[in-house]
View 1 (tube, one colour):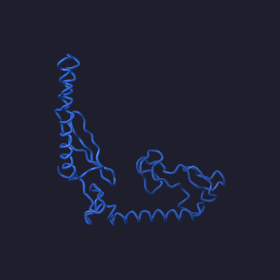
View 2 (cartoon, rainbow, N blue to C red):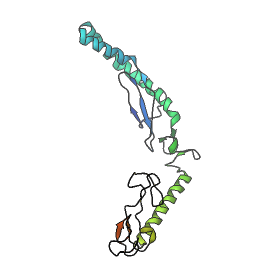
View 3 (cartoon, rainbow, N blue to C red):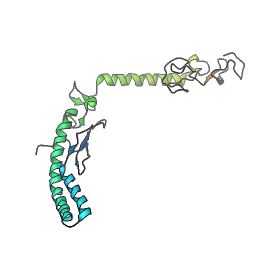
View 4 (tube, rainbow, N blue to C red):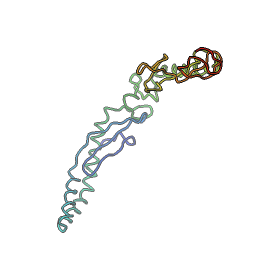
Amino acid sequence: MALIQFTRNYQDLSTDTGFQFEFSCDKCGNGYQTEFQSSTLGTVTNALDAASNLFGGVFGNAASAARNVKSAAWEKAHDNAFVTAVEEAKPHFHKCKRCGHWVDDDCWNNERTLCKDCAPDLQEEMSSIQVQAAINDAREKAESVDYVSADKFKQTIVTACPHCGAKVGSGKFCPECGKPLATEKHCTNCGAKVKADAKFCPDCGTKQ
């Protein structure tokens, strides 16, 4: 028998009625499920079991004999089905020559012919670094800002509409339902919290 290519990253879904396997990417865990390969061995045994329950005697002996034969024949059929399943799954995976892992297309660096653990995609890494840098920059600014006097922090920043749940960007009103995004804001004079639709501050009376 040829060398089996997958030894750890698969799940055996086989039953008495047939064979099926699910192979997964060693990096992200996404998988590929092979076509179900039916088996007549389990069907015959199940039929004899049903007849045995009805009639007993010779049918019961036949069911027992079929089950013993099945244990050997089924295992052989199972091995052959696994080899077939491997050949079906292989086109959906790549084997990294550096670490030996099997990964799917999303986790494979075509330019380097290695998995992205061994050879990360530089463009993806740069994009991730830029986002992280922007987050760090925003965090540093948020920690150093005066929330009472800074205009952009006088109104609560939201990323989803509190009324309909729609994703929102900048602006004061939801583009989906038209309702105000902030349920509260801060007074431009004293910094006290006031309702989003309030016209005057309840603490100092300043017009909002």
